[in-house]
Amino acid sequence: MPGPKKLDPSSSPRALLGAELRHRREAAGLSQDDLGAPLFVSGSFIGQLEAGTRRMQVDQAHKLDEVLGAGGFFVRNCAALKKSKYPDHFAEAAEAERLATSIREYAPLLIPGLLQTDAYARAVFRAYQPTATEDVIDELVAARLERAQLLTDPTTPMLWVVLDEAVLRRESGGRAVMAEALRHMLGLAHQHRVILQVLPFSAGAHMALQGSLKLMSFPDAPTLAYLQGLGTGQLQDDPATVRHHELAYDLVVASALSPKASLVLMEAVAEDYAHEDQQL
Image (cartoon, rainbow, N blue to C red; front, side, top):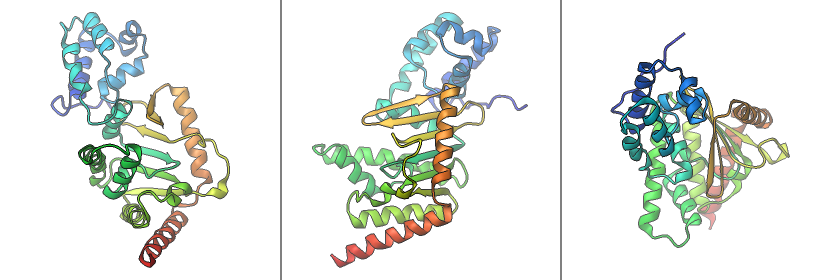
């Protein structure tokens, strides 16, 4: 059985904390379960902290300093984790996204952030914040496009996205923006960089009808589920809860069009948007 992934402590604050946590725990002769008990968290959560897939909270840092005799190391360095270009409800998920080896996502209303174009992202953020200055919108768009750099790696993470048909039909930014956005996703699919499926309206009610769902898998930590709502987001790691969401995703996939049929539909919708825009 392979050992735990070796983190580069210089790569990020979370990697630094994870490497130090593992070192101090092992030096103290504690198992992950042993260390989790005084923090009222599971051993798997401690493993996620060590692997860098979860963000350490300040109250946890205080307790770790106390239990491991770290002299304030974790509290001092935990502050660096609070600095993020993303909203609080998404910051931890964005960091986990960078470490994931596979991402499976169901998108009910919008093109997922990793697949958005500049113009589409700009239209979405402007809708979210109609009175924001252009500088604020520019910063939000830049952060979103920076996330998409994950896809410059030719194979990792494996990205499998199921788009509700509503995503294709909702004109976010206008016809030209939609045509460009759909063709961008099609280009990634034809390059074999992403697996795309469309859940058609004809599929009717389904298990994930109440909202978006993202599942992130890692080489040395349990799968995480991220659920997002209006200005909120929850990162779930309870095994039973994650299994429930994995079932929901699997059933959505089973009800969706095949990847081939999905691309045909997306190409037709993109063509319609482009043709209609030219006639205006």
